[in-house]
Image (cartoon, rainbow, N blue to C red; front, side, top):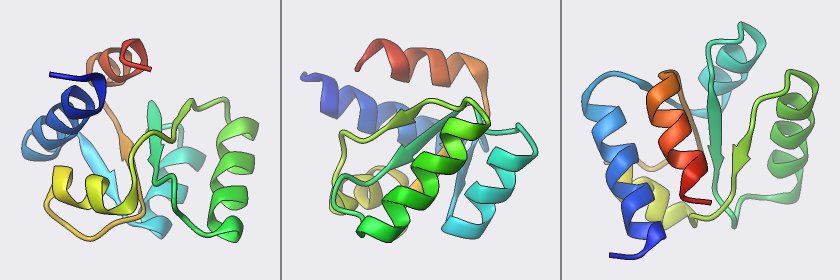
Length: 99
């Protein structure tokens, strides 16, 4: 199993355990409130969306993972999404190790 598949499996597990926030507005709020431990941004997100989340994440010092496409991220969490955030430190640490 490659790292991309392991990442998708971890995101699915985080979703089922209630430790994942998805959707642009909710993720931005989670970054601002320092609830987000890591942000997962689709590699094929629009330039404006990418810039917005990279700037916000950089300002609040939240790591960003950009390895998955929109389709892969959506398949992993079971919803059509461009961005998601993990709120649990353990999941976030595991995802960072896979980079």
